[in-house]
Image 1 (cartoon, one colour):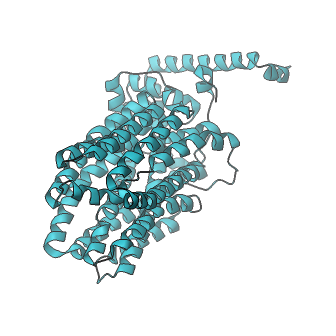
Image 2: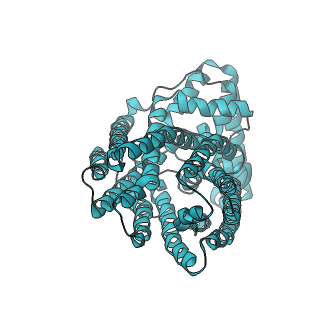
Image 3: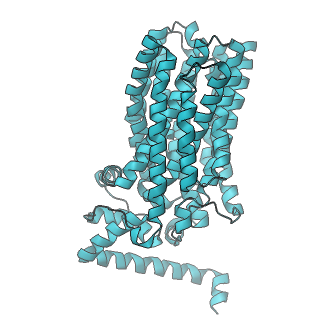
Length: 499
């Protein structure tokens, strides 16, 4: 892609109805798109090589952790992530998403190094809080990067689920490899060494992120004041029912998925599973992330029948954890639930990116992560209380209820998407009082045709009553056309074509 104003001004074709509803594109992947995303996939894979994860609980026990201090660490971690999530997303929209990932990797390196140096509970909790900063900066950023790269290279979003699925496959493969390699390394040496061995691997990810050719859609608009940007992001989250519903779907899917990974091993502990089973069990669980990434490009999740099928699978999968569970049923049920949630999470991410302009995409996506963490804190406390008082099997009913709500929201979103493809339903209710400064921020997306229909309707309503913004829009359109004409005259091949 071309740098500068001319490259940013190249029109992007608006997504068709089939593309907006998640239809799998029959077109092959452009070689430029595949080549451009290779450094990103390498970086994500290197970030996933966390060799200390499979032996973390063992190491924590060695330095003095007990059940109470583990709870304190979880609480501290749960406070840090939502605190930094939306601010880092807004910074990614206003600055550079690649450099946000660079600093996220630096935070991951610092957390791993401090964790390996820890000799006390307090020191390790500090390392966990730094890890929370990494997750906050990572949340929503990779998805936004992939979405915008696909839009820049193809002019539509039809290949987004295919490529975010491939990124998830790489991430899952790295997690599986680190689960196995970390256990072996800890057995040969010590659990502490796995933390130090992780640092150079993540350092290499920094190099890959720096070499990555970042998309520029989010920086194509005129810069606006921070308060205007924040207000636009908050309005997108709070004043559009369609966006709010998708945000809730993404947040609840993330909550249930996190609960499975966080509390899933408790069922194995309760069933006296042999220690040798925990490694393969964890590898199966994290592999569902990659399998979901592979299947998402094969499925039409926006289709009502597919959405209903996934909604019907999730609650029974959670139900296997509540009714006289055995080891095989527990592992199968958790794996099935994690797979369904991986599919729903990717799909919800696409719907969320479709619903907002690029200039606020990472901020809104991070909002879903923040909401998920805010809901997870009371969920986890209630789950822990029920598990302690009545056993983990009874607490599993919370997963059944949450999975049912996720399924219901998925079906509603599928029916809403079906209505949205009709011409008369293109404009979902959106605030008509779009401020002049907000129009300045969104004008390039509007002219390039990549603004979602509901936002476009809001801008058109504002333009119909504001002569100043109408004149500003005409001037920007004229400038873009003039720059494109200059670019064509400077290009000998294009000049020959005109002659």
